[in-house]
Picture 1 (tube, rainbow over the protein chains, first blue to last red):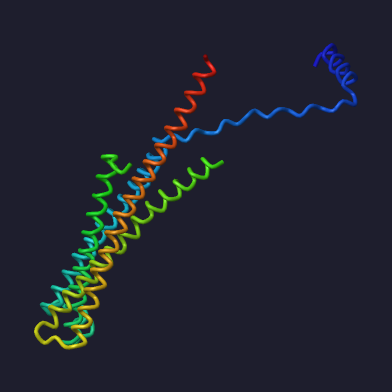
Picture 2 (tube, helix red, strand yellow):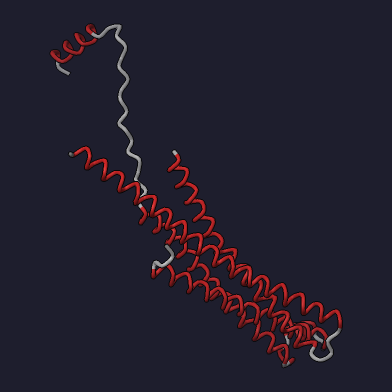
Length: 133
Length: 109
């Protein structure tokens, strides 16, 4: 800071001594305008996220379902029945139960995954065509 | 203020409607599962179906079908809500836009 500037600032201080400083005017914040397209885009991205998850879960369900069906099949042909081979003796009622459970888990998870796949594809088509709003 | 409240209400309705999708998918899945259980139980018991097993089959089938119906209803309801609220939102924003342009025109003249 040069001497001249220092003198000028000192003068200003003397001139404005005792005066209240005027409050600084805050710049008016412009409210972001909510546009229709932005809002619909947000909803569509949310729906797409859901649909993506549905399809991923349906793939996992398919895998679990086929596993269950294969286990049920193996249990039916008791040569590779895991429970009886591990326990080391034949248990016909247990075999029945394992066949039933294997078939149940397999078919149930296949049905659930088909439902999830159908609904996931339905929502994806809705989002791609932009036909909700 | 009223407009902001309206906008908030519409946004919350749309977000609730989008969450209905998850509920509907879960309900339809449980319904399908219980339907499969009913069919399998019927196949296992076959002709030697007893009173208790018939009640079990009936109940599970009934619950399954009811859950599937509720899930489908929720899906349709959420679609209807999203559509109707979207139309309301569009109308509101277009009205606001046209008011703004009218004001600008009057200021220019």
